[in-house]
Picture 1 (tube, rainbow, N blue to C red):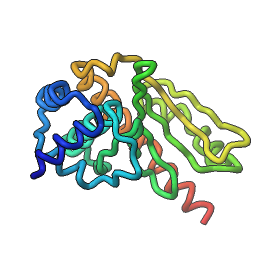
Picture 2 (picture 1 turned 90 degrees about the vertical axis):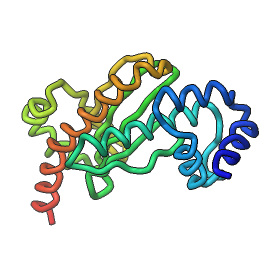
Picture 3 (picture 1 turned 90 degrees about the horizontal axis):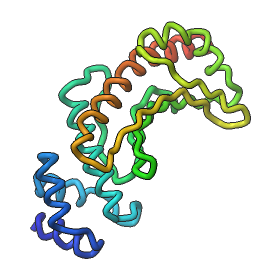
Picture 4 (picture 1 turned 180 degrees about the vertical axis):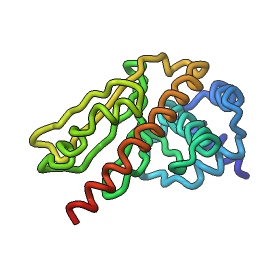
Length: 194
């Protein structure tokens, strides 16, 4: 029955079944697992198309990589959109993003901070954070916005699934370093002000 659900889903959404099954096989994901996960998603919430299925499978692989390689945070369920969030607590998060249009993967530390005090606090540790992370980050205070962002991007052809392991490795390993760098500083900040 589960495979029938996937087959019907592919047919209804005009997704090429052979191409999709080849993608599942290449990424070592069973049709049963994909069907199980698709059944859990609310059809009204997400647009179903080939791009979103591509995102969905990519985030499944990210979750699998996190489960096998990361100890400081846990994976989360995959969803068929271009972002994947990792909580830093108190409405702050690390956001992994993939953009098929411009062929890149990116990572953002999103800090909810309308008055920018948290950003300023973290910016005082910029050198130490970038030493932990091992790369220079883009620090965007975003005056007038609700949140500030600290980010980095990696240009890679992610429409080619052969590049996914490299993209996933880059995103998850950088997310782990960002978590290690930012989480204690955010906890320290909140302990000081509370």
